[in-house]
Amino acid sequence: MNHKLYFLLSIILLFTGCAKYHSPQRYTWPQYLRGASFTDMTETARIAKTPVFLGAGGTLVTSVDSPVEMDYGEKVKNDTATSIAYMTKLEYELYDALRKPGISVQRAGTDVVIILVRDAIMDLNFPDISSEGADTLKTITKILKKYNATFIEIAGYTDSMATQQAQALSLDMAQRVGVFFAKNDIKTARMFIVGRGATRPIAAQDDIGRLTNRRVEIRLVPAR
Image 1 (cartoon, rainbow, N blue to C red):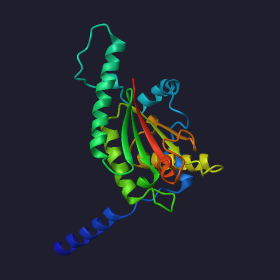
Image 2: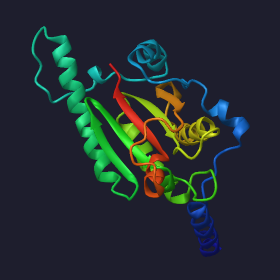
Image 3: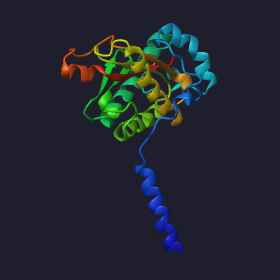
Image 4: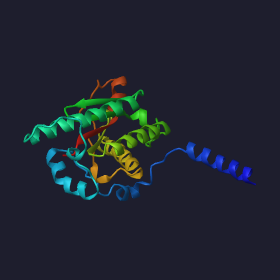
């Protein structure tokens, strides 16, 4: 009897592990994303959101143990050095974990940006996260939980071919990623979610370049 039960549980776990991820119904998205900000993650927006972030259990990067040697009385200098050290570790960990086609990790000052080409995380002919994309986002989620002294901007982009629908399509991608994070216990108080349409292309608007311009960018900024 025990062997039969073990076999049955093994089959259930096998199929559960292989089950494809599906985004929840769209009407439930506001519930998952309650607490997220649907605006650009400017410095002003982060300052305004910091009390909410802290109230939700968020952590400031300046309260994290840092290997950086501090200069007495130099708060701004110390905070900057701590942020750089923290974000450098985050960048390296993301880079090592995300060596996949269509995915890159870049540094912009103290910020870290993850670029996810649409076809690397979503189904080719359907607007939802693919099985491979779910695995990638799970990896990112695990690291975001570890480095929780950060704000997260999730920005969707389309190519220049999507004119009238560009804003809606780009926001849809960003929200799907945000919902995935929220379902996996990333605090929405950290999130800023925007759809930027065809603005800010990072490649030529030819057949190959358009595949790159359709993307989601996750920008991580130290909370301080």
